[in-house]
Length: 338
Length: 294
Image 1 (cartoon, rainbow over the protein chains, first blue to last red):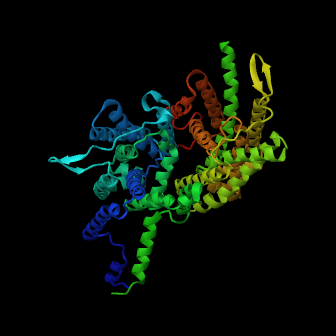
Image 2 (image 1 turned 180 degrees about the vertical axis):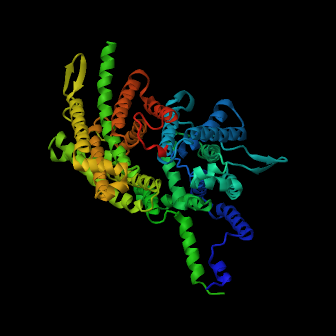
Image 3 (image 1 turned 135 degrees about the vertical axis):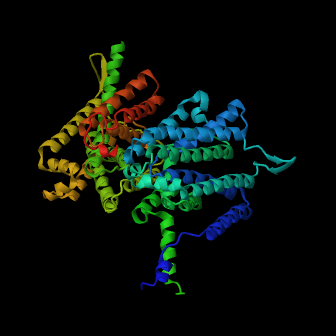
C-alpha cells in the first residue's frame, strides 16, 4: 500500500501543459464549428448571448471566486459599459473601438471606486453595498432622461464597423456568425489572460488574501490594493460584455441592467463552480440555453434559475466543476489497474 | 402653507418609516442570532400582501383580520426557510452560502407568484384609505392611524419580549454568544427557529400594510427590501434600537425627497446615505461589539 506509484496515481494531478493546450485547441475548434452547425438566426443569436454571458460570468468569478468578495452588483458594471460606449458613439460620434475602450475603462474605474468602500468591508456588508451600488446605477440610467432617454431606451445602435484588411472585407458584423466569432474570440482571449493571471503569483496572492487576510498582511501583502485591482479587472470585463451587448441587440433599456441581472450572473458562477475558470463558462452556457430549451413552459422557465441556484448551494456547493471532479475520480478509481 | 407641507410629509414619512422598521427588524433579529441574511425576506413581504388581499376580498372579513392572516403566512414561510435552507447549511459554517441560496429561493418565489398572479398590478383598496380627518391643518387617513398604531404596538411588544421575558433574554444571550448560551442550557436551534418565525411574521404583516401604498406585483417586495438592507446597515447590523431609528429616518428622507426633489431619486438618496455611512461609520448609528465584520 505504501508503493509511491499508487499514491501518485491516486493523487489528483494538475493537468499538464500538453493536455491543457489540447483542451484549448478543442475549445477553439468547437467555437469555430458552432455557427457552422447552427445556421438559423435563432440559434446563432443564442450562441452570441451565451458568449456575452460567459464573459460576464468570468469577470464575476474573478471577483468572487478568486478575490473572495461577494459582489451582488455586477449588473451595474455591465450597464455602465453598455451605456458609456453607446452614448459616446451615438451622441459624440466616437469610433466603435475607441468607445469600446472607454466603456471598458469606465466600468473598471467604477469597480475600483466601489471597492474603495469595499476594502473596509467584508462579507455581508460588501454584498449589500454592491447591491446598493447596482440600484443607484439602475436608477440613474432610468431617471437621467436627458442623457439615457430613460425607460424609452436608445434604438438603432449599429454593430461594430467592418473589418477591412488591405482593401478586402474580412468580417462584416451585420452577419450573426461574424459577430459570434468576434465576441467568442474576445471571450477566449479574456479566458486565456485570466487563466495566466490566476496561475501566476498574483493568483496565489489573491488566494492568500481570500483565505486569511491578516496572515497575508503579516507577509507584507497589501490586501486592500489587491482587492481594488481584482474588482477593477472583473468590472472591466463586465464593461466589455456591456459594449458587445449594446451593439449586438441594437437597443438599450435600463431594465436589462436591473439587479436581477446581477443575480442571474451570480447563478451562472455558482452553478458552474466559483473559484474555477472553466466552471462558470459551462454554468453560463447551461443557464443561458436551459431557459431557451424550456421556453415551452412559459413563465415557469425563470424558476429554473432560482431552483438551480438553491439546489446547487445545498447539495453541490462546488457546482458543475465539483461534479465533474467527482465523476472523474470515480472513473479513475473504478478503471482498469495499470 | 409650507409648515403644513412639512408636517404632512412628516406624517407620511413616519407611516412609511414604521413599515420599513417592521421589515428591517426581521433582518436585524435574524442577523443577531445567526449572522446570516435571508434574501427571501422581500418575498415574505410580497406574499403577506397577496395573502391579505385575497383573504380580504374572498372572505369579506375586513382589512384588520387580513393583517393577522399575513402575519401567520409570513411566520409559516419563515419556519419553512429556516428548516430547508439555514438549518442544513449551518454545519458548513460559511457566511455567504445561505445568502446565495436564499437569492435562489427569492428568484423562484417571485417567478412562481408571477405565474400565479400575473404581472398586472393589483389594486389593494382598504376601506380606511378614503376615510380622512383633518388634524392641525394636515390630512390623516384612518389607514395611516391603523399603520402607526399596529406597528408601534408590535414594536413595543417585541421590545418588551426581548427585555423582560425569559425567552427574550435567552434570545439575546444566543445572539451575544451562542456557545456559552448553549452551556447555560439554552437550546440555540429552537431559539433560531423562533427568531425566524417572528422575523418573517413581521415581514408578512408589514406586507399587508404596505400593499395599499405599493404597486402590488410579484416584485413589490424587492423595492422594500433594498431599503430595509440600507436601514439595517445604517442602524448597525443586529442592533434593534439603531434599526428603529434608521427606519424612521429613511421613511422621512423618502417622503421629503418625493416632496422637494423627485420621486425617482429616492433610491439614489437612500443608497448614497448608505455609502456615506459605510465610509464614515461602518458600525452604524448605534455601535455594538460586532466589529469583526467590518
